[in-house]
Length: 289
Image 1 (cartoon, rainbow, N blue to C red):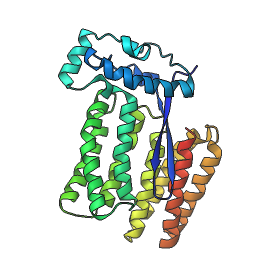
Image 2: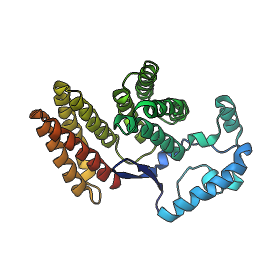
Image 3: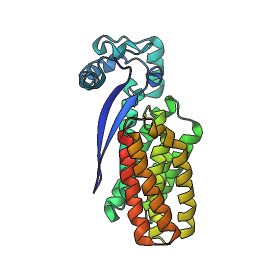
Image 4: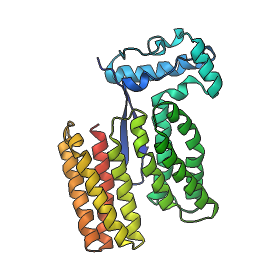
């Protein structure tokens, strides 16, 4: 039996459907607190649904050192230390659950990504920006308790603040929204996602290059192509090692080469087409993890 509990989160895009299989590591679970008595009834109901999904994918979890919550949700007993922590933080223990962290992170990223991709513009983009900004504090609080560094959280804070500021001034939100997705990239790993942070960052770079090309900023596009290629070199071995990874890696390598050629030739049509290929290739990579 596997120690990882996994479940799928489906993310819809205008021209593509992205399926993320999320894995929760034993190391993350070791940081979780036991549910307090006031949350036992809710946990029993929610836990049954989560447990059924875990069993379907990998059988019963068997993680050393995990609180009794994961063995018998209905019989979990609080400790005085747990009660003190919950009282201080004013949050239920479920906030520390990596499944919740991942789901919430994807909601923030989805809201920002739809703006960056141009799927939402005008009032709809403004609504999406407000949603991302409103969701972030809860995600931040939980991640801050579960291993995210101060610098990672500060970078995301700054990106969210820039998005909020441009929302107030009615500026174009696409660039700011995409910077939010870039700042969130390392946080997925902190929340237990098995997809490498570098893969999330490749998606951000593909969108950033698209924005460069649309804005005619070829110098920035060339710089970001170099970063894209460097980041891809750093993560490719991890992709190759996965079942089906070599095919996904070949797809991305082709797409990144096409982006580099389009930007080098300053061909807007070719470069924009290639950035779409980048997004599709990242989807393929994510599926092998």
